[in-house]
Length: 140
Image (cartoon, rainbow, N blue to C red; front, side):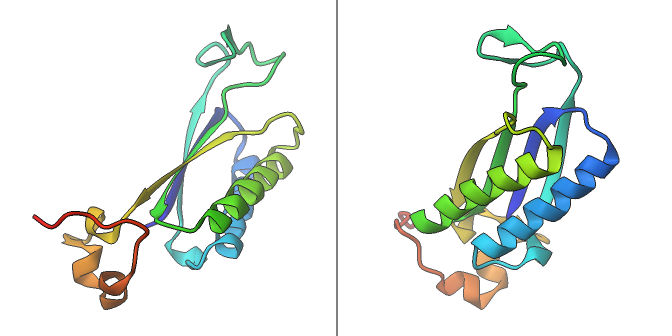
């Protein structure tokens, strides 16, 4: 179901624990979904393995490449605004660097585009099948 992929420089487990707790809480408080269905994955890199603004990050100066990709069902603009604000605040608070503000991409999908345990979500849960979206997909 909803999940977040984070790309950032390699950090210690304590920082990852902070990120996990704060980002999960931010998701729970910003969306109509519960924290128990939220997944998170870290993609870490060493200095010299990513670039931002045309410069390879050396681990010392400048802002590193920071990216979040959220996969979730379609949500309103207001929810997206809350997510961007709360994820950014959670990230900055957890890593302790005010200038480390990640780019967040929100990849939305209807329940007909998600498979869990061998079935489409729209086939597995009646609430998902009845969920309305801001757009209508053509039927095959």
